[in-house]
Image 1 (cartoon, rainbow, N blue to C red):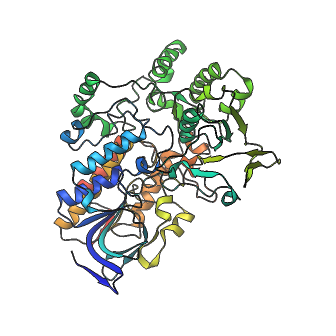
Image 2: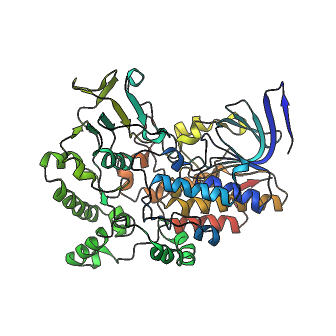
Length: 544
């Protein structure tokens, strides 16, 4: 590796590969390229430590909603069995410790540049390499650029006029300070009630002085059952390692469960209800991801399952006004992200919690003293928490100035039309590989570790193929990308998901092109399509 300094300031490096991010994908990508192929590779991360989403999202109540024993790396039995989880759905502190365990066990930290942000990456057509610049002014020359930035890592932080005038504490959940915020006895307002907002609300309601919850879109929920694990439970799930390694990559969503309850129309109403009740009582995402696949395609099935969930919610909320604001009626269960919760609905029964609907009376601005609605109603607050979501899938990459052949800008192109080839490469950007990017299951509809491992392995195998055949560059052709986008859209448009406004469709970001961000054809199907491309020596990809 060549390294020199110019004018005692800018550092120049030449590497085989640069990996952006040290979350689940980035850590594994660094390991695969460095340890298994012997490449000169560095990972770069804005954070001060590893963990990706589990570094940044340290807000109160942050935790898994995938079972811990499947949110795991499966390439190493030793690595898997060397860590023991304390409960079924652990919280953020334990998850962050696990990812630090992975980094230490694989000795990855020495090749990570922390507190460093990639600001631009330009493909040099003369050298067929990437020129990558950091916020420190350092320049890295690399053959391969692999983005492991995360699908939910570009938070929507500047949402309302006047945020900078607020005299209290204002924080986005994805940028929660390491030192925490003392909410005891404070007047707190939280904007947003998606999966993150729900976790925060149910966690802090009992400690704050007062809590104002500003809700626009109601959410379906599933009660979480989160048993603690002792030695017996840990030994039981560790004994299933080979089962998980063989089955998870081929299921529909990368979870341990799949759609095995038969066809909806073949069952009597009583049989359907029995299945739904049994799954509901399990306290996991199974109702969403493995009950009846017809709910994603058929309006009548969607409505019946949706009403099943609404009835469960009504029984807990009781108050008709709460029900009206908190229970969805204009979209079907499962067409939005479905959160797990613990006594979330009951929080609204506490005398210090006030529910404020902003669907027809939106937030107008943040004032020095709190939040003002369109009709002039004002709420004085000490702390404002923004659980306002992310520019999902594409945002992490469009916030970097990425330029491919002929000076084309990824940000500009994706502002018009979000396109990729299998969520792994983009036409016009040679040797740029992506994980957690649009048009792959890993953007949203997957147990993330299952899908991110698959993408990292595909990328690593592709790079190995190039090196073995003494090739330097690979890029999908326009025809290949057009075909994938058409297939993606064809599958997506058969579902009810595309008829719903949500971050899955990019609807939460003004001006974002509307397209289902995640491939919905199934994790196992996607894997086979990717494998077929690799085993056929990457047809439809230009190589030289």
